[in-house]
Image (cartoon, rainbow, N blue to C red; front, side, top):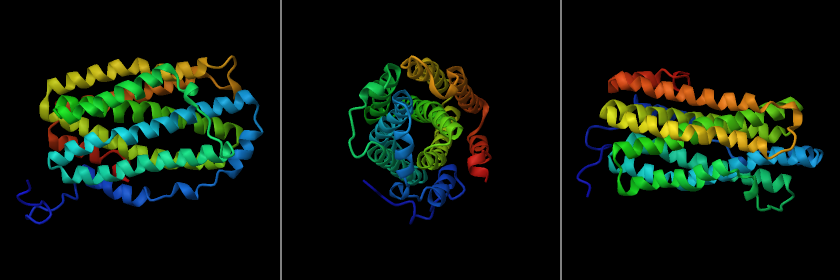
Length: 300
């Protein structure tokens, strides 16, 4: 039951808060339409590749497509938690968050339908075992747990999985791999434009995750920090194995790419996220907010 509403009870919206700053960024930079991306040249470029090269390019894209669907499906419990806690500013931002994930699903589907001439095959065999463990099992499990037990520990485990690992490690490594490869060989301008827009959206999502987890750690102390540390360390080998298993699918690696380079990139992304959250152990809420507001995504 409602007894009053924040926007009419004299409190209003805290426009200096981290989620409201992210909301403003989302309104400014997140308004783009996947239907306006042109993948016609991408289709020609893909057709000109060898079969090995085509499958190599399609493998991370298949993982992106499935992953974007997964995070779209699994985000709702977190939105419900912040709504039930009365965190209106966070809920406002999360509406853009969910909408952006849905746009990403739309965009990858449009790409695949264009480059594969309207015939979408079953691409499940391009999803490696560690990927399936994360997206089929762990992500829906930790997100779904919030429906029955929205405790700070469960919120932290959910955000670590979703924001720090799926978005902050796997997605960012995937963007890097795609952009590095496509830039190197000078093909697929539509996909390259698409990944730039995706990265802008995901950077806001990761910034929110860092803020959320840092807030939970600052507010609740060692119990939440231990859950965060345990979840991060449990997921790191799986995240790295997504990269390793992706490369192990091929008898030879095309385009002169070095698999170790991308494994190292994934580990570096993990370490950066871990270090950012660890700072919150010794920070007040005010310091967490100030630290979050000073990050690149919000300071610009």
